[in-house]
Image 1 (tube, rainbow, N blue to C red):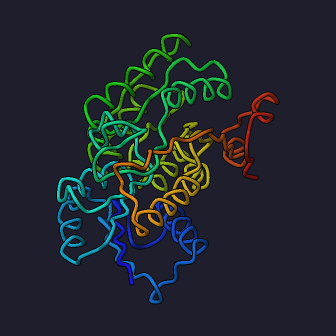
Image 2 (cartoon, rainbow, N blue to C red):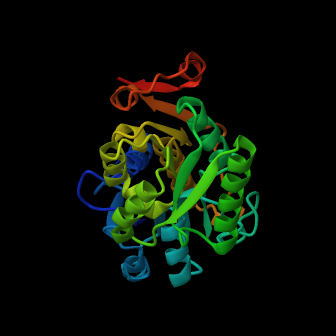
Length: 305
């Protein structure tokens, strides 16, 4: 009987964007022959949207003698690694595992952390380009970002990418920080004061968990908005561009399987996304009075109608 600990910055009650990820992970385990109470016991710990609780929750899992910790996001993985350098950690959806000091290299992690990544160097810049295509005469865009989402190096890279992309498109960029969920309402007030034409939500576990509220507030302010995962479009946002999060989570199940059979995290390469998906919410486009260009419709992996 193996004990698997799940550490999530998300919430235990719906709606929560991490629910699809965890369901996909559990389905992946099921496909590999694992059954709750038959050959595995699953312990779940949720931070309920408060990342500062993660170290305490990670320590609780470690005290429960779990065989492996499945950490949802870089934030959870860093908290788990901080509490233990020996218990295997499989991270779902890391940003930049090397820059965030979770692994030595993608090919040979070298420590007790491995798993899947979801952020690539072209993600944020491409997102802004796609948003530019759907919003006519886009001249001013706000980027909602969480400065402490990842390491300073990773965040500097994300900011640099979007600044370069905005400059290339001749779009004025307004970086709007949100350090916690409580800052999001104020961030929207700052955007409306500047009369921005659109919003891009940068990658962040905290912001991902707030997708339902951000999508709703964007709609209320008649602001075309793009997220970094399809869940944003599912919750009513205009569009999303990023790795398929349930797919990333399902891949993590294979890591757990290998580790339970004796493999070492240090020797299991981190898997990066091979492609990103574009999801368009046509209902949101209609409500905003936007016409989606045929070229963008042709690029879309999924249309929500």
